[in-house]
Amino acid sequence: MTGQFLVDAPRALAFLVSQQAFIEPTVYRTQYPEIRYPRLVPVDTNAPEWVPSVTYFSMDQVGAARWITGNAHDVPRADVLRNQFETSVSMAGIGYGYDLEELGKAQLMGMNLSADKAEAARRGSEEFIDRVALFGDAAKGYSGLVNSQAVTASSASATGTGSATTFASKTAEQVLADVNGVLTGIFTGTGTVEIADTVLLPYDQMVALSLRRIDPTSQMTILDWIKLKNVYTLETGQPLNIFGVRGLETAGAGGTARMVAYRRDPAVVKMWLPMPFRFFPAWQTGPFRFDVPGAFRLGGVDIRRPSAFRYLDGI
Image 1 (cartoon, rainbow, N blue to C red):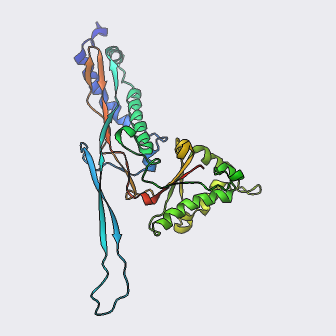
Image 2: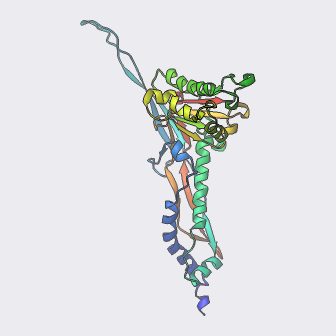
């Protein structure tokens, strides 16, 4: 009768619950290097988990000093301007499950349940958040990091071969001029207050720039040269962050390739994640079926200072 000791649902559920304690820590330690949003967007998890929306304020300082006399009655005043914004928070979920036969075999053989299903569920949650962070969700009214209507978008200069705008048609100097034009536009457009420290490129363009030399006699590639001669590095002495992002190949106007430049700072851009992904208690969902639900709550990406962002299309 040894093989019949796990024939009832209550024992199967109890076994699954005990296994959860081993599975979940393993899953939460798993890293997903190709998931992009954590390194591209500051993530805020400080809001209460079940908050329906997040209210925040943007602030701008105004006022300038000027010459006055000792008996002046009109001393210039500084002030602070605040604008209120609200972002809705929505819930999404993904889980995993087992049937009675799977649980019975595992207990009979004295085996721990594999973490594969739980890892697949968590991976699904990370991919979902990644997609919303970068491209938003029209159904929820969320825009993403690379397609916000609040950000100024311009076309790359038509200085390439045959008046083309693509990087592939341009010399090293022309490509650098396009990149620096966007970075300088942010810097001068904000009165030198904002300066972009991050650039996102389509993978094809980034790889091509990393292979093309600036001239036949040099070992330096165009990407190396951009990292060395961009205005952010020249101004601050800090390296410019350049990342390749899938989906930018058609993110620009008319389905063209888009470059994104911005300052990666929570004051500029932030993604709300009040409830990071987590698993909930296992439960019986049918005569022979047991599920472990997982859920998370997020509010999309808020570009709080659009002036610190620029898009360049047609590259």
